[in-house]
Length: 395
Image (cartoon, rainbow, N blue to C red; front, side, top):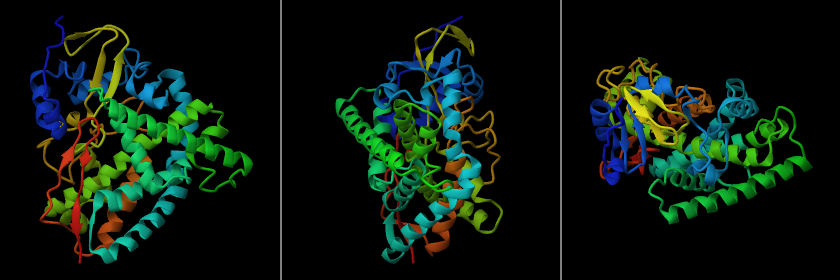
């Protein structure tokens, strides 16, 4: 069987808009070696859906990988029983029951306060003034890190996701990531000490927080630190970018917003279509643990691979007019949250934050919400993708 074809990319163009490049790969070389990433790239939805489940071949364990080295070995970088054990330890904090009973109402209060502050201003950058603040406040509650601000939460998360996608090896990017993880470790330790001195009341927000739930489940300090940082790195940027990006998508597609307003589409449909169309988490790396054949291509032990969720969600084999934003589309085949045992543990919390709180509340409370016609909206990123700013006005 043949080895993977070599496919060169322009990293700058790839960061600006990866979709045309990945779509061409999906057609011409669905399993290809990309020298600029030093890894195999898988782009077809069905290949990723099949092989992400085969952790014996595509292993999440990456001892020398960027995430493990910079953030610690979290459950995302474990397979088998170790992964399942850590996932079970975390689950009480992010289960649908906990989200519905505690987090949804608490986040609604935070959104109300943010929107009350915003309303008199009549203009804002949704990325920094709404999406970032709301995601950060939600994470302060869910993690139990009440000793850091929403702005700090976002800065630390951004530094970490920049660090773990720093395949070009920029030392300044890595340095910022290391500073952020050190500060988070200190904040986590501080909260653990506070909980030890004054245990949270059963049924309270603090009792359901990730830090307290993991500590009570018997997780080690290293595991608590690593998994809290994992929750932050995905739980801040993905909802933040989904909130700002989805509002932009609706405002720039008024016919789609009209479908929501007249009851022909739900906020959950809007959310699922946006994360299919503009996947905030665009890829997941894997280590090839043993030789195999994937789609007629031989892959070798020790190589690195990337599952490209973003372009898989635009696979024309499953989605008609995949580059179009259509809120009534059947999105059941999308894999924006993964497809195998590493399916995002926080997916339900993310959907609730965006679809139950962030989207309906801003459209209800800011009359005449519209894009600022002077400001263009620019997206960046391929591993993590979102708008840099979304300037809006309202009446």
